[in-house]
Image 1 (tube, one colour):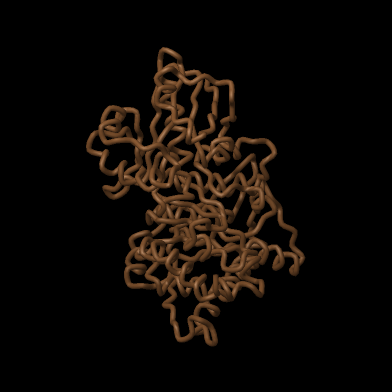
Image 2 (cartoon, one colour):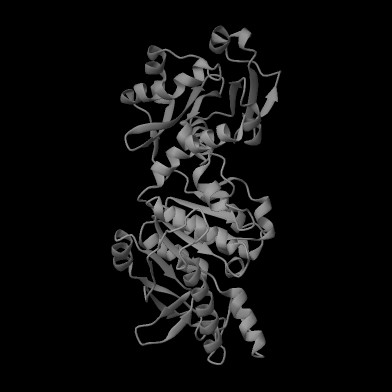
Length: 433
């Protein structure tokens, strides 16, 4: 394929995402380590592109590395309690200075007009202000945390009004109390609270840690909670995931973790099917429900292409009507975007997993895994001890989710009468408690 053909295919592939993201609200947290690097200018170009594609943006930054440097240069050693910096009166002026230095660098980059770049001539209207009311953490384990604070309130109505006027909001990890005090706020907590308050469509963390290489493409909120309670999970990952879970369990639809070392990682994650980071969603947030007779047309439209390609066994409308009570679907804006069937056989205490399908525009966001978990829960409720599936092309995916290929499992008699030997389907089996 020529370069021009590859570009055309990429652009066509990106088109649905461009449409889907337009007028949506994204909260993006950038580590100050990356802001100080030579690669930051590339992200600035990408942020400008998102703005001109009609995406509403709130940019936040961390300041941890810059604060460490500033305190060190001034002969001050930071004290920590529960991995939180104690921002005492002596260090506070240097902390504020460090935060403002990071903020100023972002402002200068976003205000320079982007000459000699693909976004040449673009101008971004950048707004910052006292959008966050802070409050003290208080005394923890008998230690006064002083000017280390937490978010008390986000002035979401002001932020939303400015976003509606096509301004980009820039926020620092600092908050002011109603009595005029200044507090150093944890950047991850601030980003999560802002995203929740404005009901953001996406909360995006851009930074780099060694553990990012081991994270899967998708995590559900329950997966995150498992990692949080796992002994060997790094503390900084636990901290990040805890805020991600709070966000997706509240009003935020998606959380993304993107490695800052990947050039163009933000665009790859947002505008390609495979993405390049880790996507976190809340299990069930999209509205998984039991199917009804009105869903048959939507299910047929969803599974039709998979039946034509031989991935799924063909099902008639009449068969679907008989089995509709065994289906779960995910509906979005009146459209069936995913489905699965769990067909139990109480006599043999087995159930078949069938018709697992996800619309191509919504793949790689964990819907297949969510539906499979729901189907397994339904099987368990029916007293099923084993579940099986027949597949020709998706065996690896099922194996990754706890199924094992078998040649010894005997299909129930009614299934044997329907079994098409010519398909040479593999039988995959999983025991459930």
